[in-house]
Length: 163
Ligand code: MGP
Image 1 (tube, rainbow, N blue to C red):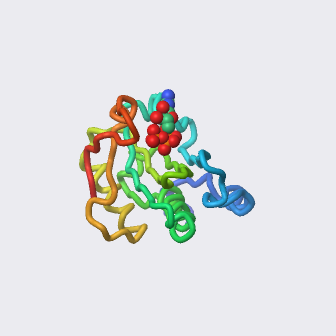
Image 2: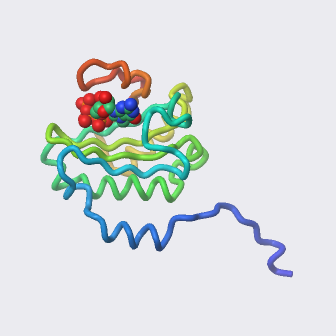
C-alpha cells in the first residue's frame, strides 16, 4: 500500500510543549544580570564536565551592551530555530546545545559542539550560524575549546577558529 513508500527521516520531540513554554517564560533580555538560558540535547548537561561536552568547545558571539535591546532576543530565537530545525545538516550531530549569558559587561550567545578537533564540522557550523544571524563582520565569531576556557585567566580564552 501507499504507506510502504514512506520512511521516517527525522523524529521531532520538540513542538507545542516547547513553544507554549517559550511563550510564557521571560525573554533573554528580561533576565537579571548573571542569569543564563541553556538549551541542550536530551541527556547532555549544560556544563563542561558532561562527557559529551568534555572534549568540545563553543562558538561564541559577544554582544555589546546596546545589542541587548536591539539584537539579543532575535539572535537567541534564531539560535533555537537553528538547533531544533537541524540547520547545521550533517554537522547537527556535533551540536550539544546553546547558551545565552546575561552579563553587565556584555551578553554572550554560544553554540556548544562535541569535538574541538573536528575542524570541518566546526567551520560549517560557524559559517551557518553567522549566515543565519545575518552577521557580516569578518572574525566576529570565535570558537573556544572548553579545555582552554577552564584554564584561562581573565575573561578571554584563546580561540581556535574564527568566522
Ligand atoms: P560564565 O558564566 O560562562 O561567564 O563563566 P562569565 O560570567 O561571563 O564569566 P567569564 O569568566 O567568562 O568572564 C563564569 C565562570 O563560571 C567561569 O570562569 C567558571 O569558573 C565557571 N563556569 C562556567 N561554566 C560554563 C562552567 C562549567 O561548565 N563547569 C564549571 N566547573 N565551571 C564553569
